[in-house]
Amino acid sequence: MADSNLVLPGDVVSSDASYLLQGHGTHVSRNELKASYSGLVKHVNQLVYVEPFSGRYMGQIGDIVIGIVESIQGNKWFLDVNSVERAHLSILQVNTEELANRRKIDEDVYEMSNLFRVKDIISSEIQRISPSGTIILQTRTSKYGRLDNGILVVVRPNLVMRQVKHIYDMECGVRVIMGCNGYIWLTTWMTSDKGNILSIGTFSSNVKTDLIKKVCIVRNILLMFSSHLIKLNFDLINRAFGVYSRLFPGKYNLDKLMETSLLSHLQA
Image (cartoon, rainbow, N blue to C red; front, side, top):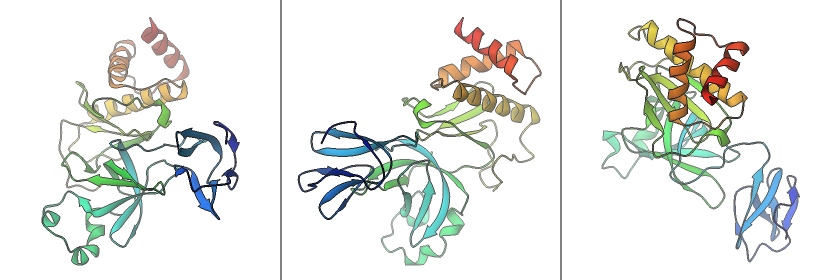
């Protein structure tokens, strides 16, 4: 078995899976290790996995991710985390006072949609990854949970740099929650409206228009960086916002000429 071989779904990675550790993008069939999706075969000692071409997110334990609830099954929420693997959050891994000292969850199952509903957006942490590759999430601390009152920006996961923290409050009043999976949530930190359930991309009436416009500027900056394949970090975003504000006061849409000017000033 050679490293970095190109494989397609169903291709045999190894004819003998008995001595290998099964990693992402592989499955065992009749003692053969096969590829689950297209990509390059990688191995570390006995661990074998497939690195996908699609640029989809490959989860790591401890990563902060943002997910969208797709379904509720049993005592779990299943989420889209922009990954080739399934991701789920168990009710036992949710930060709620009612569940703090409970072992039996039967009474809670029917109330799960009261905690997180389908299409809700949630910030969470990867607790572990199962042998089959399933991403298992947790929201057991207060910094994780449902995200309201903001907009979701999607970039390539490989552009998100892993940092000491993934939640950053900008001086302008914008809060950036940067998921390692390429999902980024933009909201404001100058107002708290956790109880108000809103649609994606909407803000409650107590958020000032000026703050909403600043959120839109940060969104445009993120999309500009993404289109130019520039890796993201909070220092760069903050600096870009400052330059944007000086170059284009009162403007909230970013056209191609403005992009060129902004990028040239950032590189100066």
